[in-house]
Amino acid sequence: MDVLVLTKAGGILGPVAQVLGWIMEALFRFTSTFGVMNIGLCIILFTLVMKLLMLPLTLKQQKSSKLMSVMQPELQAIQKKYKGKNDNDSMMRMNVETKAVYEKYGTSMTGGCLPLLIQLPIMLALYRVMYNIPAYVSSVRNYFDLIIAKLPTGFASSEVFTGLAETHNLASVDYSNMDKVVDLLYKLTDKQWGELAAVFPDIAGVVSSAGENAIDAINNMQQFLGMNITYTPFNVLREFMVGGSEVSFVMALIALMIPVLSGLTQWYSTKLMTSVQPQTSDEENPSAAMMKSMNIYMPMMSVVFCFSFPLGIGLYWVASSVLQVIQQIGVNFYLRKVDVDELIRQNVEKANKKRERKGLPPEKVNMNASQTLKAMEEAEKKAESARADKIARSREIAKESTAYYNQDAKPGSLAAKANMVQKYNERHKK
Image 1: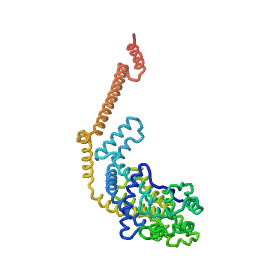
Image 2 (image 1 turned 90 degrees about the horizontal axis):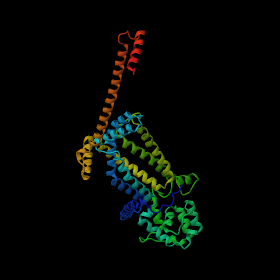
Image 3 (image 1 turned 120 degrees about the horizontal axis):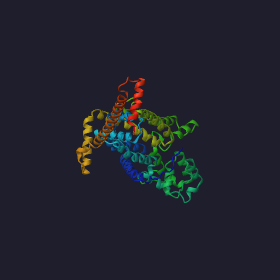
Image 4 (image 1 turned 180 degrees about the horizontal axis):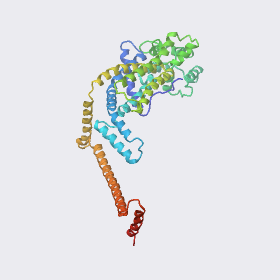
């Protein structure tokens, strides 16, 4: 499966992807000053920079996870208390008690979601940049523009060009847009570049401002570990199995190892992330079983996807997971030293400051849910007391009535029953 044309991302991802593209461009220019123009190396450096930039969000998220693990027994106790109670009053009480627990620890129900919400568009934009480097890195795009400038009018309708488009599942694309042409050229293999140059010989001699052949420069930029990063592992292995002359055993082994390493490193980084959190049984925390399953299935899915994605994406996943493992070791060391009480105090202080900015009394931060809960408990106690008094009065009336009807006769005797009928008639005689 080949990747569809992406060009530049639009919508909310557009500006984010553009910023990430500037970072990638800066890294490419940086390595170029040392005579190294390699997209694979830039992907690794780019991954390192992104990990460092997102480290504060990662720490915030994992602090929230550690706090949640401390809160979990109290939250589970509330859930157990109201298990099977679906009436409106019980649901309201459950929500109030749950909110009281969150306020006690100076956090909120959505506190741990915010870092994830911030990271999500960044991660999606990252993939857009990785999929289509020339669309965001002008230093790379310039080489393709030099070649396109030498293509004759009507090149898109030529047999070789339409054949290449069909090979990459891009036959239906409108190639009057030069961005789309770059998208296709970025996916060409060494052999396909040769086929294109044989039909359009003018592009074979295109020289960049640095004095190097443009096609050779593009191929060199895309090489990493002896393989073009635009290839997919599936296609490389398929070519090797059918005896493709361009694919060696080493290339096939690398194509196989990148998806496998992607899955293994992702699994290990997830294992490290959960190692500092208190372990609970599946019965105590049903979501724990689901998380364990996800921690196994997600790496397996990344292995499957990685076979059909370009090697550049797989390289990014491996680099990201390896750096995540290194980062997680440091984060775990830091979290083990974090004092939960101090973390709660800091959270409460932040909550107080937010309330101050809203003009609300800071001291009430931990009282809102607690006061509501106390009022509900008092109301319930009054209602329960009223019910108990009513039952007691009913029992007293029944006792008095029985004593009245059974007086002067042996209880249960025929005389007592006759007496009961007589006194009943007396009481109800008009």
